Figure 1 (tube, rainbow, N blue to C red):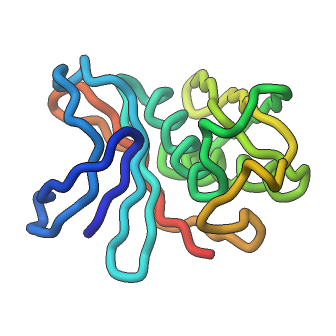
Figure 2 (cartoon, one colour):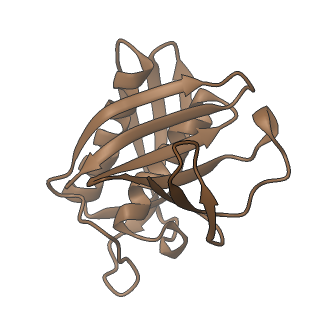
Figure 3 (cartoon, rainbow, N blue to C red):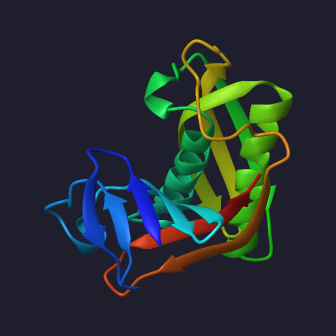
Length: 171
C-alpha cells in the first residue's frame, strides 16, 4: 500500500507492513487531529480517504481527495458554489452518492473544486462544493472525472473519536 497526503511528503510504514508517502504527522491525536485527505494505492486499485473529527469532516475531506486526483485543490479558486443533496440508507451509501454527485458536477459542468461544506441530518446530506470552471493552464491531475467509477465506500468512527470516509476510485 502506498499513500499520498496533503502537505510535505515523507516516508512511513503502514500497519500492513508496506510503505506510504505521508505528510507531516500532526502533533494532536485522536479527535483533536486536524482534518486531512489521502490517496492510497493497493495493487492496481486507487482509493481516496478523508479523515475528520466528525462524519461531516470525513465526507468533506474524502471529496477533496477525490478532486485532488483531477486537479490540485490549491490551484482552484473559489468562484462558484454548487449545492448537493443526497439521501441514502446508510453512511457508506451516502459517501458513494456524495462522491458520485461531485464527479457528475466536475464532468457535466466542467468544474473543479477546492473545498466543501457538509451537514448531515440523519442519513440525508446537504453539501456545498466551492470552486470554478476548468482552467487548463492551472488544473492538471492524474485522471479525468469522466468515466470514473466508485466502489467499496466505507465510513467508520474510530475508538479515539476520529472518522474516516474511504472509497476506491476506478477510471
